[in-house]
Length: 413
Image: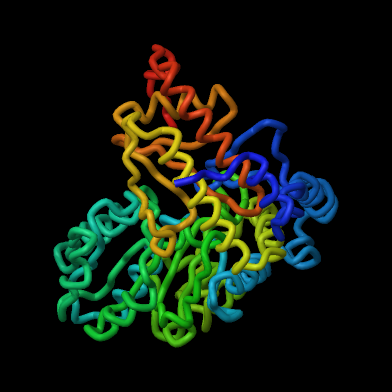
């Protein structure tokens, strides 16, 4: 297979309809940042927005900014903006808490709609927090709720009359495998099973049509492709048809029908606001809104087309330049089944990733042996794919990875 030359890749970049957005991010010269699927790059507008929120809205406005700067409306306002990226309507998405907490809310709300069923179903190897939240709910239920995790290809066959909720990640965090949301949801509904979709590696990366797929609930984080910053607030989607009946277990005061009535007894808000819990994190919301507003400037069709092109180019270059060096492609080769990252297995994957960081190529490692490279179309270029593969090749040819400092496991991989 012929790999495009660097000049040919540069020509693709020159014709890229998204190229104007690269300058909207603070990326140092020479950096190949292939880890935006783990933490998105910093939008240039974010620092000024945070400074204004701190100095003017907080410093000068103080508590009046809950109204005057619409702090109180930020979870719904930003949620409505994210909804447009997900094929949802205004009032179906709200920003609050972390992905893990929102998973707990969505799962318990779904269980409240299926009181006669006892199983939460997922796949083995799903992102750990998804499985942990399921397990925590089961433990707290005193035996009423059971968790089952089966092989990825066996999930649909396990759907049965005892399954209340199916929790799946649309784009798998390790392999990048992308599920057909509409087809899976349809199969689940045929058996009376509700779906909760984890969109952490989907939102802002691949086209999502929650309403078109008939999805019931979904969650996702704000710090990956939405570029909201480390620890950015997450979002939760609840289909409008469920909002009147679904009740999450976490009944905090911001989810109350009248938070500032200060009533002793909980009454859930009528709509998506019932999925709020505590006081909104204003600084995190301000940063996230910058990332979401930037994402909204891109056409998702163009984002997906570039993601596919970047991924195909990376795989082609790895095939041509790193054959015989111990790499095994873990992600689907067919881009139709692949999200916006490409993963390889290698016996020395951790060491290679550390050596690459020292050379200006940032990817990440997922135990036990996965090197993962994120494809963020808003700021990555075609030439970055070729340059990254050349760095990987040179590290392997020279055995630059074989150094003691690259073997020492860091707290974050």
